[in-house]
Image (spheres, rainbow, N blue to C red):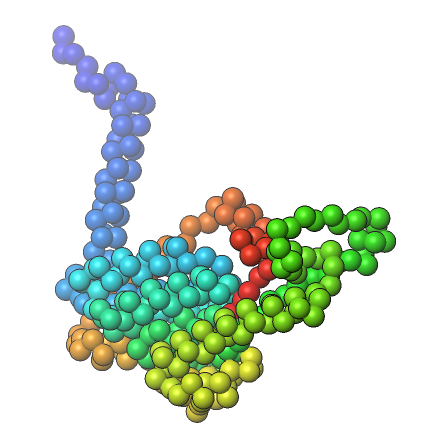
Length: 296
């Protein structure tokens, strides 16, 4: 008597095995296909340009800077477009991204493409690139610094809450919501803001190759349209993402088809969302004090 084959003895298990095999083959095929596919078509035989996406409030720099550094090390990336759609954010992360873009620009051409808004810190980071392309209707500029403080003294009194803060010095609790700023505290805070503002102006002048006097005239906190910004020398060219790609392609001396390699990869998690929401609702805490937020 002929022995029954496994497929005949266990048709259900054999069917599951076939399904599993097909799924594995599909996954492998997709992985291979993805390896050869760029964001705008087949990458085989194409020259590559990197894309760095900066959007939303600038509160952190680690993911963006890690991607910038990866593009800087990749010899297959011939140039980079930084796509900015941000109203600005914290001073320190803006400065860190500015420095990372400046280092990248020493190795390969970098062009900024401005979206709907690239203001304050969004404009600050753009100034580290070789060239800036803005749409005529982009809102940009807004060169300045602000520190927003809250005085809850009267509300605390109505609620019967009394603050008893002990400090090591007269300025340690400057900006505390439990009391208004004294004249000396206002002068102290203004001195900090003025220094941060001067850093902003100097970096814009350096990145844009402009006279500091010219930048100061424009840096009163007002925003500009892309068309106005071009007139004042704050951007180089009017256009969108396609124009930015063509410009960086020209600066890199590339001809023929190209592939855009985009990043950093967006990863959504409930925890990161909740933490991000918390950061927007709660004032930043650092060694200067729990109630200070300096913003570009």
